[in-house]
Image (tube, rainbow, N blue to C red; front, side, top):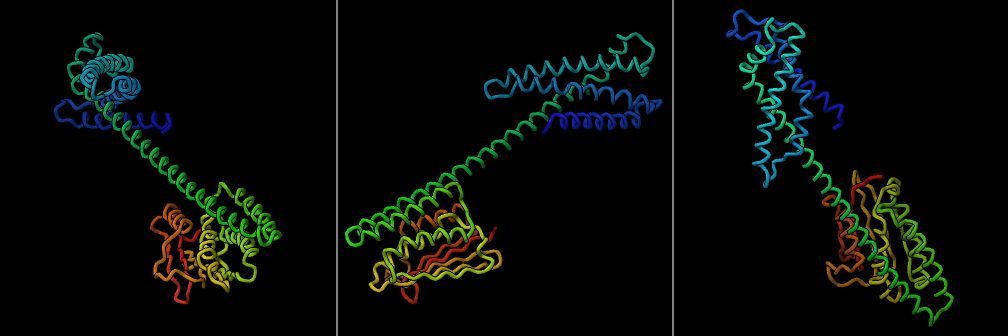
Length: 351
């Protein structure tokens, strides 16, 4: 809260309090004759405007004398003294102002101060403590809000660090697989191995360009997959075919960067590669109301289990989806009835 707003709040609080006690003084049946409106408002507004002006002093004392566990006794004693001193000073200043305004009887100044002290000290003293407790509550609220904000920021930074770590795990996994493929080709087809190295270089350059992005459009992610498939098709040639079916309004949806490439890689290396005749990978994406549904299906050898074990690429993708979308995501890896495996993921649709 800015200083101007705090000053305005203190002014309004002093005005409202002064008006309240002015109304009480005017309508108090104990006073006969009844106190006039001018005197009731003049006296009470003067006193509480003075307390409003004293508020920065009370806050300064409160900041210096905090009720810490080790020093609360000393702080309490100091505030008792400060409250008495400021109340006396406020009464003296108030009587001087009221005398200048002609709202006090023509009597020696000392007598007016003494009379006001006897009548108002016990009722004015608690105002100091009201200001003190109001500031302590405000200070506690601000510190609590700051702690929550810092906690949320730390949680966000931790989550981003974990997501980045998951992404970093995918890259060496992909590189090892690709370099193993290139190593194998070096003994049988040097030109194909050279072409794979060139495609790998392009793929890595594209990866570096997207280093800082946690999410990309589905169209961009499919381009990333296409570059990866160019590498694999050099090795598999006609044994690998790919079908991509993306809905018209699904291409602009935001998806986690590197979300599909591990799924396609898993389908090739653990499904298609082990099948002598090769196979087909099908990628489907559709928007259904507020959800984007994507599936990657292969007709490879499969694992024979209804729920095949997840390897690093699939496990990391599942972990990233959980970090990014929580309970709003779904990730399913299962055997396909037609043979091979299918991965289905659902995430909130957003552009």
